[in-house]
Image (cartoon, rainbow, N blue to C red; front, side, top):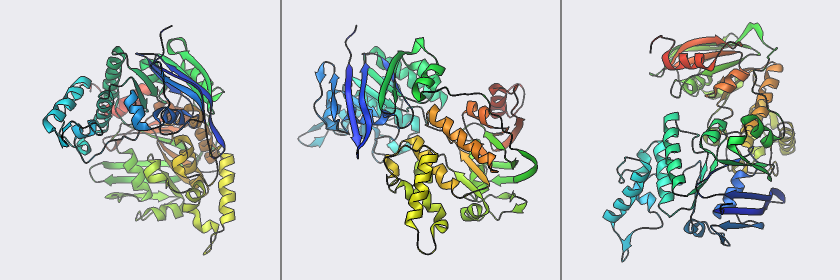
Length: 500
């Protein structure tokens, strides 16, 4: 068998007495794309941070290219040939591309940076990955995909032996994903080992060679991706079967319109949009990025000031002046950007659940004991993986952060919930739990407007699907057995016109 470029064995790590990693192993071959798979909270990020030197392992051994790594300093780890590209880019947006690529390894003579040689050096690696951009361009002027390519150029400029990509396609288009895969294949040819983390199952089979599965911080198995399928990987991840079939919703009251949106315009983004949501219904809002889905949601809740149109809740016209009115009336919005808009990351789980519900916890003096009791109740009900109700939100995985966002609005007892990309960056196991929460909501009389780019979950969860294109409603489709993804995409791409 070919010699491993990376071998991690017996890795253990705990925080505040909670075991996060227990006897985990991972082997990566030269020129291999090795997928690291597991539910949110399974230990993937912790394992990578141990590998990168950000966390110190408690037990175990890490061997890179035949040499045992004994250092715990990230800079030393980079010097050994390991580079990690996280979801949140590690770039300085206020300086140029070439300065970012050479940060920490500047080309200088007697303390004076050689700008010409620095630009030439950066250009070589930009050409290598096919990014045709002036090295002097500020990083702040780049698209998300271009920033990602700069991160890769920065990584391979360090004589990288092992490259880790964490959710590299979460915020880029299909075309940009194809370009990324082309770069990955070229790196494979150079013998670079690649660890690839993603929750998009179709990608794993397209780009991956082998896959290691973690569950609850423990090693499960390693499989060849050409000898397995989505169902087997899903079962290995969550320890149970996960269904992708359309769910039955028997709680719809067709005679009761809960939410009516009439002829809404917003700047030049939304044009004469009208939708209605019935009691107990899960209504899907589909369309391409830029179609106006999030803008419509924010106009409904008053975060954006619509330029025309009306919104009615249970027959009462909303003024639409601010978000507080919507919350008070019973409409809540769960943002797709949970880290910036949905949570306060430096505050505790209890604080985040209590924040929009302070009046329920005492006025003018807060009942701290009641806040703790409620937060612990939601930790149990929603199966939130956390060391404590006092854990800061930044220390929770993405799926568990999403559950906290849901928990704080569940306690508000709203009548309309707007879920914007509720499962983005979340594994199939956590998705299933969130879907069950949504079904419980409609069972108890609430209604849901669900915005999603994932047509599989749109068809799984929704009773009707409204499609937007360029800010206009192009279709209102019943989610029947004969509705196909191709038909939904047809309305999203062409607006229903033939021959485009």
